[in-house]
Amino acid sequence: MTEQTGSGASLADFIWKNAEYLWGDFVHTDFGKVILPFTLLRCLKCALELTK
Image 1 (cartoon, one colour):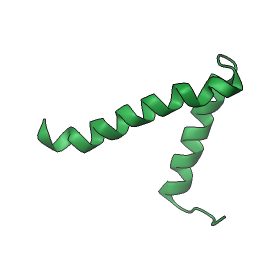
Image 2: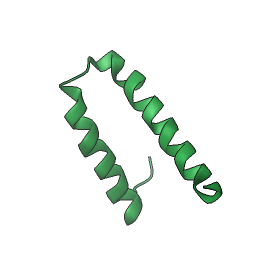
Image 3: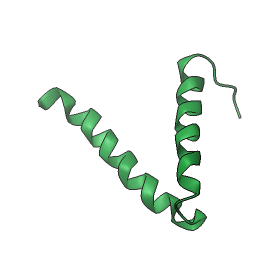
Image 4: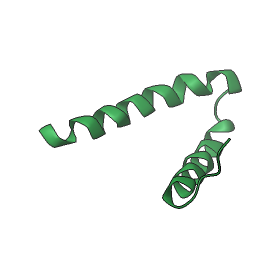
């Protein structure tokens, strides 16, 4: 695995720090069912931002 530097590392840290808050609320196997839809919605929002 390559080592991340700069904003990539801080972004990854931010994502994992927030993900840790969800571990208590969801069963480990259901975690992907929650994160994936929100990730997809965020990607769509960013992709469509120029057409707003």
